[in-house]
Length: 103
Image (cartoon, rainbow, N blue to C red; front, side, top):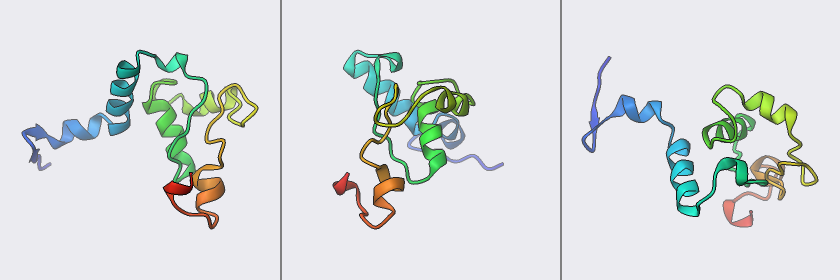
C-alpha cells in the first residue's frame, strides 16, 4: 500500500477519521453542547446512507448503530428527532428544486 503525505499528515489516518466526526466534535465544543443536547438536525442528504452515516459520525449514536437509532426515533417533523424538516435534497432538492440555497 502506498502511503502519501498530505500537508505533513498521513493520508491513511485522515481516512480513518471522517471529516464529519472532526467537524461535529469541533462544532459541539464551540457551542458548549453535546449530541444528546440536540433535538433536531438539518443534515446533507445527497443519498439516504449519508443521513445514517452523518448521524453516527456526529455522535448521536455509535458507529454501526445508525439503523437502530433511526428505527428507535421518529425523524419526521412531528417526531422526537426531526431531521431535514424542509424535505432535504432527497425530498425537495433532487426532485427538481435543486440547490443548497433553496434549503
